[in-house]
Image (cartoon, rainbow, N blue to C red; front, side, top):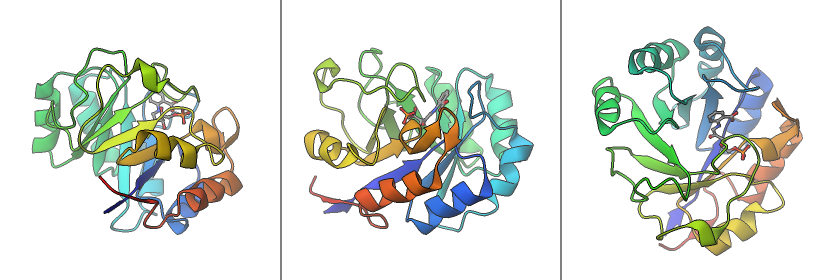
Length: 208
Ligand SMILES: O=C(O)c1ccccc1NCC(=O)[C@H](O)[C@H](O)COP(=O)(O)O
């Protein structure tokens, strides 16, 4: 038996972080790449400082040079790095050596391996081809069943997450647009609703 890992991403304000933590999120994400949700590392730092032990602080990147990722993730106070840029396994090894936990993000038709750990990562996010867009992807687009600690992402919301978990049986879920009132603007009530829907803390029980 395993309880669902729940990541709430794209947070920009203390009240959003506090709602995610209070609602039982396993991880909170901060976007340090091009996005309406982008934060500078120095802006993320006071937000990660609000996060208690046991909740992951995830810095999200897409295509930045490795040295920039290392510097910004450290400055932000993250303990986990999420890479969307198709980085090579060597980038994951370098970040591991820095002490970060690692999330590799990909999409179903990318051609990337769908086995968690293929590049040395701890977790694998399977997301829509346009991360943070709120778009869902079709289960039929998966070339093979994902393996290991994989996180379902892309277009989840308080209203669809329970059915999506029942259909695909992921190890975890990740949400951003579905807990926003408009693009890039989080709604604390929707964060609470999402976390309540998945039964956080602890999450939906699921059998592997
Ligand atoms: O959220 C973004 O704007 C973003 C931009 C560039 C790379 C990654 C980004 N988000 C990463 C996430 O983990 C999102 O939570 C994930 O893509 C799901 O987003 P959504 O479909 O909006 O729930």
